[in-house]
Image (cartoon, rainbow, N blue to C red; front, side, top):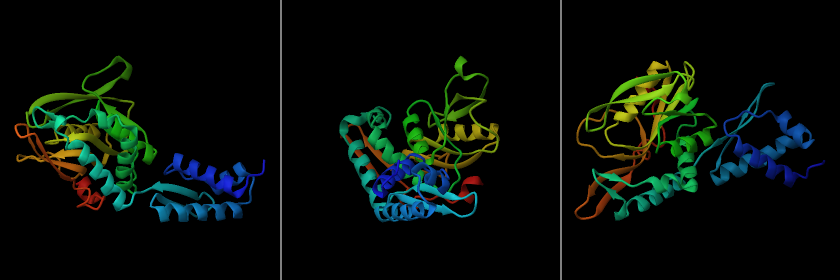
Length: 283
């Protein structure tokens, strides 16, 4: 079958977007479309220019015999601002108020379109962090973790509160949870990670950072490295903050149950420019 250029461009674009961060040899496309490498190179130039002009991502060329092309999803500042604004609009609805200063977020976490956008926001921020896996704790962090993992093309590691037979041998730690300062347990299967992996931790809501700090301790048990922390919503807290270096998309300042008001602003994602200083993370 002889592919027309228009057909190659559509199919090639779809393949690249479905395999982010994967190095694809030009010979793969040449064989797939039965075309000369020179024609494939011209096609990729068109795709690259379109991606970059539209702010959809970067198409990186790796030279050499073992080289090829790699699609890196990115987002423009305008797109991130729009997503954060939409999220704040949704979260500011009074019927989301829950006792203890929390917000009802389950419906948003179950929205595949919104989660896909948020996943791309954080994947774009950590595109150069050499992530090997995304870690979260069951259950509400799972949709965010999978959304980020989809755009970084890495596996998801799910930490649980108790051990399950289906997990096999596990490692468990005790940690101090949140402002209540209670000792709790988290468990992770020994088969979940390999030694030396760089892991991005994510969660839907962070108040003091006890849960995230617990996951950070688990990484040490597995001899893995923290590559970053991504939080959907952080709550302003007057006391000690257990986590220092992280990215948040939205910040919850105050919940007034009596007046029915919710004060939200953009998270520190915008202050940090969507990037974290790796030296500060690893220290």
